[in-house]
Length: 171
Image 1 (tube, rainbow, N blue to C red):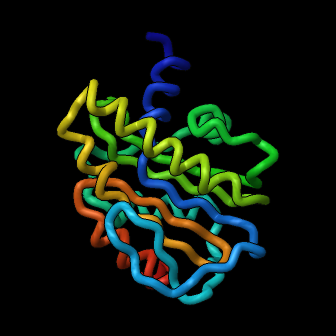
Image 2: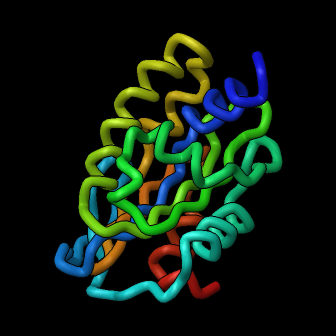
């Protein structure tokens, strides 16, 4: 497997995702629950994709230290058109043996959330065949919506990540 294939393999396993959506998307006020969509009071995050991804990577408890990925590879993995986002940042398990990861998209449109949900479904099937012990991380994912953002988290214990998100990325 060459470097490009390893990068794609690692990127295909991105599961903790933050997708910044257009300000036109409005959210409700329900609290997040595992595997369900939820929303926060209208808040606008003032972080860049890199800052948000780094905060999530620094806060989460991962099976192994995550590595940063090139933005150019992220759109390939999620099958999101480059025109749908302004910038992106991602971290994933370097070995590809764990589903733990973080991805952040600053977007122009709402297509990113739909792509992330499709990616979650696809990855559940993938991990069932590869490492079934990682499937629970995907099945227990939570989605958190802000006025201009959607947070999608998948890891063993999302409590610290959820608290970070609920507090507007202020620790």
